[in-house]
Length: 238
Image (cartoon, rainbow, N blue to C red; front, side):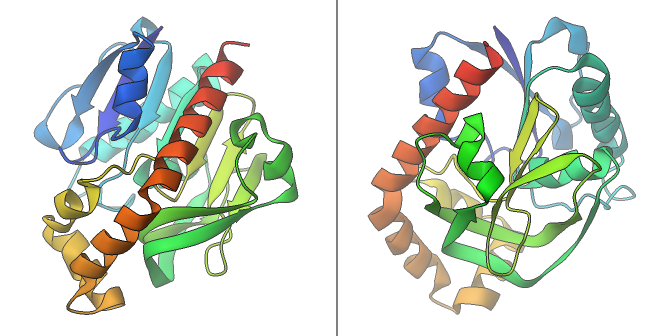
């Protein structure tokens, strides 16, 4: 298996999932789109993961590579029918690329929060063995407002109705972060846009508070990440 990863900022990588890939001996290549990397021939890869980032799906004037990225996602999911996993921005890009819409998240979701599986989510192969109510890290001010036609919503929160979705039988995405590891909060808080959003929601001491809350919940984060990863790999291998 050969995995392709689209990244939009260096610190938003596959996080804790990297150790699982290494354990399984899975080769993976990174395309750092914000640094000008070109998307390679998609036919050379078996799986695509699309990570988060501080830009929004509509920021195509500032980040023109978003146009090519969305086209690649559309080709990957709809034309090639290969396995896809999107996280945060990768969730929004999947929706946008396939005809859904994204809009402002009001209020912004930033912090250690909970999402609840829908009835469809409880039976979806990606979510098997995960609790109906999951604790996770949220850090977003944009949401999927309208999923693409044919999408199945797998999880929701009180203020964000599309926290996870599946499209067809090969593409999954989550608005929340499953890849969190011990240094994630500090790494992301170093990005000005992320820090500003965090302080607006959680106050001047938001970084310290979020770090403490994430540290307390880290065992659950890591356990959930491994379960979701295993479910994804088992499902795509048939």
